[in-house]
Length: 432
Image (cartoon, rainbow, N blue to C red; front, side, top):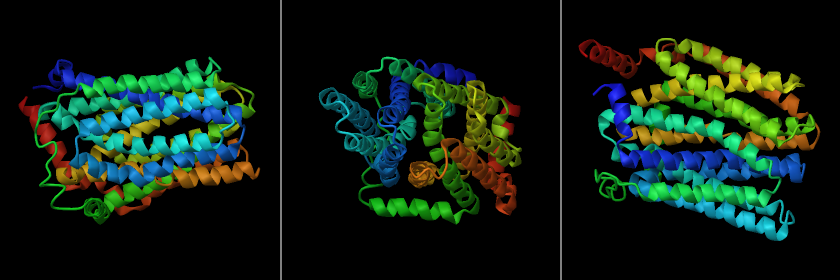
């Protein structure tokens, strides 16, 4: 079966289509919720400290439960984990909406903190289950196109989420916004509930619950990851990259937009531009075969992304913001997809779930630290939002360029599993 034939036949697989639709709804609501909540706090309270604390409250539960969620996905029904996570997020937002209707903003900041903690906790269990459910829905030869379609759904949410949030923000009634987002989560549960999984040892107690504990599974994944030098380099770089990216962009951008006198629609449109960049970057990366054989360009790409973030310091007209955010989104896909493909190629299949969960953890690991630092700096007037993004962008550029100093990174494409996968692909192409 060719790749194109496999991709077309996916749309005849009703369970895959339901998963794709449920994931799109969940991802769209997730993306819109993050923007609406950030703007709600900035608009209603104007407090930099509260925005930073709320983002920390959302990040820490994800940090604490991400690896637990990965192990849970190997032990329990992925379908029901996903269903429960989406349902819980809908309930949280519906209750928050009712609370705002009843009390207005009098419950702030504690109601926002509680929503952030609960939302981050249940969200931590969703993604490990979603990323490991495909083998129970599609045949092995369709896994590659299926994963591609799921990646596209995530990129669509980066465009659609800000668009939805822009439309909601125009209503200027926050209880309605959160209630509608909760309804989107409820709709997503209907698709997940109708999934029909193949009974291929989806839950195998002899492999998970009996032979090892949660902690043993978690630590075996950690030990394996840091026993491979190139994985250690990629993961630690990812950890510090997130610190220079998450706080400056997620806190600095809405506050900068507010200080320039622009509204929530401008903030949403900048986020939409970021999403458009990720989609185009994903398409380019696919056309260029994931930059295979050209991995030494990846640090350069990330450095350009850092300079694009720094350029927001000079933003006086939104056109500069569009150019910078498009560049950031473009390079996010052009760097993330090659690294993920590389990791999937060199890690043994029985360790892949835990390694990918650890990668997700690294992606948010220093996020709370970044939010805390940015919150402190902004609250005490040490720096403006523009200066935060200027410093964060330069820090990101320096971290990325430091990768060239490591011999293991310069030789990463010589890894036997990576080189072997390229040989196998070439052999199949010649024989087809």
